[in-house]
Length: 144
Image 1 (cartoon, rainbow, N blue to C red):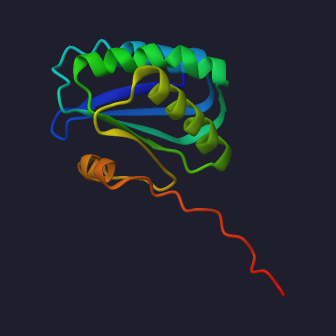
Image 2 (cartoon, rainbow, N blue to C red):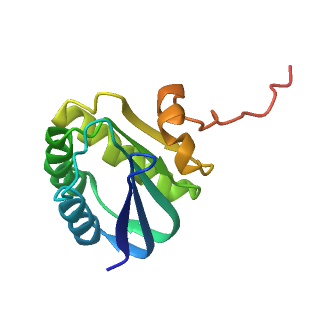
Image 3 (tube, helix red, strand yellow):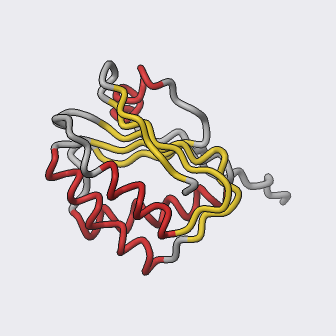
């Protein structure tokens, strides 16, 4: 399975990663496993590293299937999620997943944040409070 996690108790971060060709089924297995962590998750955040993903095959309907898993993490006390996706196409699919989960599940207390640059585990909570680092697309100057 090209997705897994490790709970970094010192930083209160569920450090997830996915690699290779990732499908909805892979993400569902990852979320199901993470939602059964035996630890108290109050105040913990998720950091999902998608930097090694070649393709992310999740449709809008697939994103709806992930929402209940995020709801179970919310019920367990997780406060937010940071997703690192440097590839533009993977980033856009992650945006769809985030938007869908936020609409269906009502969102995480500290929210969801996407970034195209990595975040150190010790800084994930701070980054989550700061907002997304994605830059707005630049447009060429208009010539009069």
